[in-house]
Image (cartoon, rainbow, N blue to C red; front, side, top):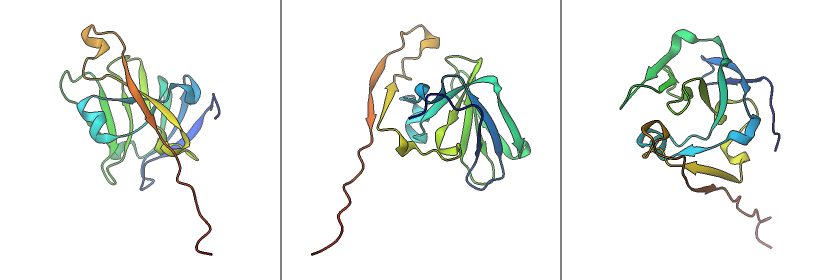
Length: 146
């Protein structure tokens, strides 16, 4: 897997929102979180600095969702509902970008993704804690009946 992708294009499902992202740590920062929102969203996210995201089309379609402390800003397309990125609570100087929105990328490109405890958040004084690993194992394809 590539470590750095600089910059990479992305879009929501309907293509109404388009962006380019310069990833802070390439794909090495891929992760999941256990907070209530991330558990339901299920996305794998990678990091970009605030100036590393450029919305090239459809900024008027982006809707923001905030909850709890209202620090993180979760952006999604108001037309198709796909989460594209969010400004992190753990590091408000960074965005997390949904890898599924990045050109040529899929969450299934990652065999293992670290999962971090978002219920005991670092912004609340808790240490960054890895709670597990999300593992994708492709099914073996058989050639049919003999």
